[in-house]
Length: 345
Image (cartoon, rainbow, N blue to C red; front, side):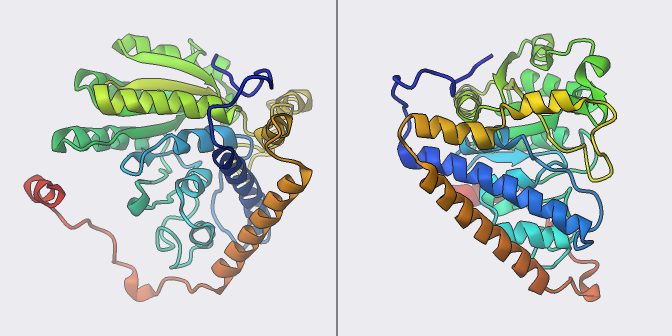
């Protein structure tokens, strides 16, 4: 498994200091935002299901940071962190959770259906595995139109056992589509462990069935995820070769708000994984390399807390969509491929 953040501190880092601090701030933002989301759900300001990225911040930030501006990404319903990492304003994400018209999906999608097309974020999808063929379709469009971009198709470990996963991987290899299949293996599909649900628990090995490259990365290590994703995206973009990247990570809360996460895992297991918490280990890593001190970390937390506070305030003040707009945004405006190619010329 590829790892980076436990290297010796004598080895120089191939990244600018500002870039590393940006990684940290994004992870802290996702953590604080998700914790506030849990609070807002408990206060009934958010309704419906919520699935948090708490514990998975390194896999989220590392993978999204590897994307170019032209690249696209599709995720599962555990999508808040991906929207934030891709640059969607925290206020727009929180307003979407509140069901307000200023939300990134106009208040129509909520927690499981975030979207920000302008930033190449083609959404979370509430149906398990429903996003996988969509990612293949986006990659096919890029190839058909000759566009210089790649796609990240994000899925959880549970989605690797459904038909759409195998169909999409097969076609992506047959047609040489520019896609990276990112499996965020957080150890459990709802309450069932990977070992109990998958005959081959090393999920990246599924790639070999399609003569596709597959590898595993420490999903709690933001730099390892960044480097692996960047390399595989380049391979997809330039060589038109798809691949599978399995990020081994862990979610600290339960599967969603209805799951305490206690009945199928022990507190000892959770505590062991918390020793790898990226929001705790990465600040120590930066301090060891002389790139940040405690005051710097506290400044980041203060900025993030202010952003989250402003996001909640923005969502509270925003109006709900008008009932008159109920039938808007139901259908896309058809555009022929030739017209799109002319527009991109």
